[in-house]
Image (cartoon, rainbow, N blue to C red):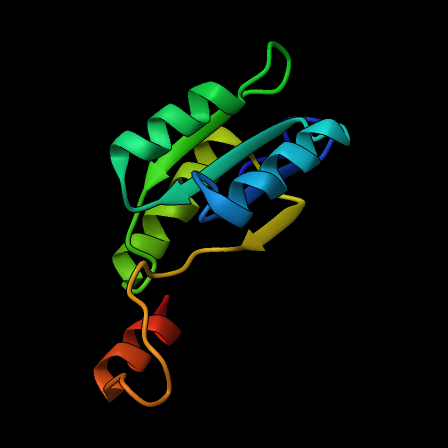
Length: 116
């Protein structure tokens, strides 16, 4: 990995384009985070969120990735290395939009949820 590019902390936030992940990014920026890389599946949502979250001295970038695959995780690591240097914070807030209960979900849904 690259040398740290800032003395202020930098973060990777999966699921950072909406919901809990986005709220975490906002809070970290309020507390002095230098830069953030948000990760999600939707290019449109992620690009918009990164633009909305970015501040003049606190840029937020986005990488689209499927975290249930090794290729997706490697894409995130490559983007983090190029844009952040060594991350200080990792927040895993990614989730699937699929919903179900114990009574009406099949094993495949549970496997997909846990893989994310």
